[in-house]
Image (cartoon, rainbow, N blue to C red; front, side, top):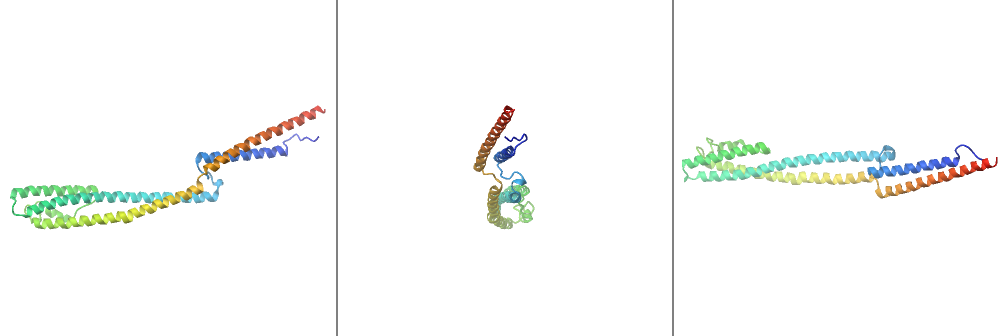
Length: 248
């Protein structure tokens, strides 16, 4: 009876099969742990290149959305300023209409002028806060100005206010159109592109959990089977050695 004392070809095959089963199990375990199909370049070199390109695209899209968001916040802030300015201008215009008549006294004109000056100061502060500024022509409405209530021509002041109200309303409409037809469209396009890019990245890089769980179970079964097979082979080898000694 022939007997080789070293590691037999069968044992080498069994060890190789056991190592392959372990690698199969470890790969499935890693993918389930990370949620990724590609954890290193050797997993899928071409897929890795594609995945990295898509990740770069997602970073770019995220930056675009941040820009749109910043523009929207700035636009909303200025729009809020315009709305407040429009309300204040309406009140001031009412004061000028009241002062344009000949039925108010000098003291009443002075009181109205104080209200006008305070309102213009409020508009200046509003412009500094929101980035929306009124034209310098409205300075003529202040005390001592050519269109002031006290000492000027209130009718001219009322006309200036009417023109400015129209300009504010026009600017508000333009800002609303810009937000609706530019910012909203840019945001929707970027969001749609982000969804499509993320879906493509998922298809390339993400692990299939159902498949990997199946692979894990399969790998564990193969590992257990290879270990049992090696134990059986080792026991047969031991029996052969004992049989050899029995014949001596």
